[in-house]
Amino acid sequence: MKVAIIGAGMSGLFLGYHLDRAGIAYTIYEKRPAAGGTWHDNTYPGLHVDVITRSYEFPFARKTWWSRRYAPGTEIRRYLVGFADEAGITPRIRFDTEVTSATYRDGRWDVTDAGGTTETYDVVVAATGFLRVPRLPRLPGMDSFAGTAFHSSAWDHSVPLAGKRIGVVGTGSSGIQIVSEMGNRGHQVRHFVRTPQWIIVKPNPRISMVERLLLRVPALVRYWDWRMSRLRLKTDGTETWRLVPGTDRETMTEQFHRVLREQIPDERLRAKLTPPSRPAASGSPSHPTTTRSSSGTTSNASSAASSGWSPRASSTSPARCTRST
Image (cartoon, rainbow, N blue to C red; front, side, top):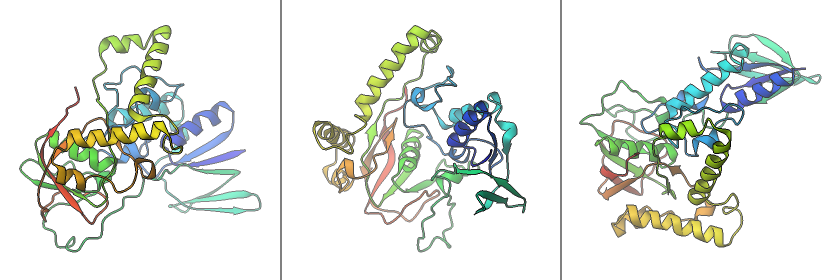
């Protein structure tokens, strides 16, 4: 049996690891020059994983060098590239190779890449994820905009941000992380909001040397994992509150509203930033930092843009932010 895996992100590497141990031949196609998937593409300021790092890494490939409870994107990239090397997966990856078609005929798959090469496989697995294609807003005036504009997944680190007025469009996790980090750095930021999001605020402390040593002792690791599971329950709620009405959903709803009251003291702005739907009816980005914003009017000036559009409200920074400790 031969398996083709499209994408060398977390899912593709996970599958490759287990196929290798099962003795099944496989090839991973990756259009990027390195493994990591979305963690390779996204390098924007403030990028962190939004679940506890210990819960995010592979249970069969633990590391103790993580710097924070919610690891920054640079460390996730380092982890995934290192895992591919250590597990012997890297030689099975065809980098800079984009799949253009996969045709099923006579019980097998013909996979063709952008270079015109076709190979036949018994199984094809699409591990491309859903965060790989940037969604750019179509805004009047974008073609004539004199500033610099780019998508968050293609962040231009050559652009100096000091002294610039920065506009961020979009309220998904990326937009929230970017605005929080820009506020922490003292930049003047205007956040354009079409649809407000419910937000969970999570402290993101550094992992101390003592804690790293603790993770090397099996008996203490079990205690650490129990402690982290309790913390995740406190911040994220149960696994079913979004699906099943009841006390757990009411508790999480109150938690979301409490965050709004604490972070947005201005009642008029808070009303604009309160989502129209219940928390269980929409996605709820979680982020280890938060920004407390003051009200302001919209501005046409921006030097960076992410996804989304049609602002109903705007918030400005410099903002009073909680910093990672």
